[in-house]
Image 1 (cartoon, rainbow, N blue to C red):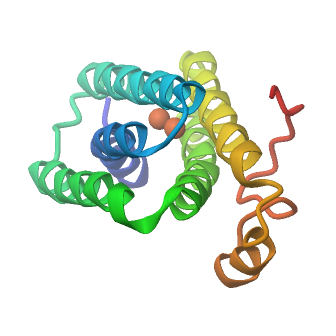
Image 2: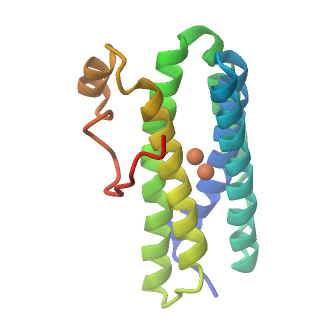
Length: 175
Ligand SMILES: [Fe+2]
Ligand SMILES: [Fe+2]
């Protein structure tokens, strides 16, 4: 069956954006200090590769082709963020990683909604699981910067922080 355009495009974008995230975390893990941080960020990188594989299997099921434009675009974005982690400083890298993850949560829940409009509920579990993983990533990055003196200013400027999330999910801080 043919999925609606928005859903097809969301899947293709998520597939490529997961690669960008994984690349970005390679740089982030290398640039950050502290073994705990490095280990956790490598785990997060691994989650993103798993997400990419899971999204691809959904795309195959519905004959959604990979977008080579998104692959190219997100390759550049991922590598750019990866290298920039060495220069922008740990606070900024943690902040923008958390902010990005915060928005990613919604994408998987939006996919659930769009599948439902087609009467498809069989992917609810896997999509919600990915959304929750992104939330865990958001919570981790926020936990690293929660008490940093720059956070209130960044929150005002960029709209995400200790009291503002892009998604309505609420989880107990696992830290
Ligand atoms: Fe992901
Ligand atoms: Fe993530």
